[in-house]
Image 1 (tube, rainbow, N blue to C red):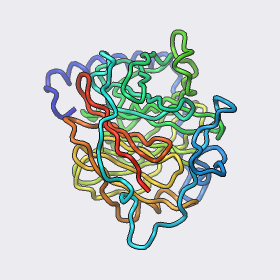
Image 2 (image 1 turned 90 degrees about the vertical axis):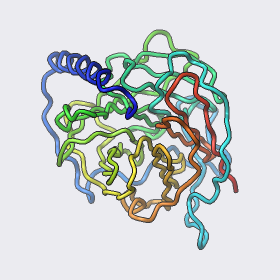
Image 3 (image 1 turned 90 degrees about the horizontal axis):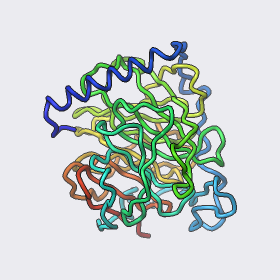
Image 4 (image 1 turned 180 degrees about the horizontal axis):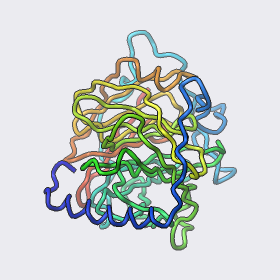
Length: 345
């Protein structure tokens, strides 16, 4: 969003503020709920359904709603990093949808192999697009009951039921610091794009409050029953955590997990399906952290990150891990290339 004119941004902000106030006026104000402390209720043990015996098996075909993933390596080999298996950048295809012109968030489907879910930035409504592995247009769908103030990133993963895949849409952007530190993440049961009739139903608004200020954020990932929000700041990326399993009846005060001096803005994030790798992306850099089984996210992020290949994109804001550990990225713009960075041995 750094390349938009100030006039366009002001117009967008004014329109979305009016829409936000109209929506809020229709609700009763929920009570603020304090986030659990680091040692309390937020779970740190389950990121997916039971891991299959064969590490190459990634998606169960027995039940469309179930998810499985490869088993993570317990430790890294001496002297190696999470970035070592990634070497070359390729092009998987081109985004075909004429409506995806400002791709800001992307997540790989946990139930439909090869399918990607992508959403636009603030110039679109509460809408998500299904994309094939080569960028093919599989349709665009409204999210019933959701509001798009400034959607910036999305993730996929389980909710309170570890066998049910959910999509999480982060309405977390705040370029003008007008949200008073309050953000919303919409949790939606992941549908089959080939079977959707009309809008996608079942959205739950998870409302969060930062505990210590007002932040603009463009990155999120889901792990261990929690949503992690990464702020966008050129000096320090602050990572906050909130419960991902709630029913949307309260506003939760988020917990500060860590602050990372990356010296660059973070525009996207994801965690590998097996939970072993956390990735942040900026416009020129992809940072990675290794995470051992059972390790809290905060402990993993406390280690030194490595840098993985970063596709050359005009304004790349999206990153999504695939089932095999590879990752895809895409840039804003009309019909951008869909890049892939394969995971080697």
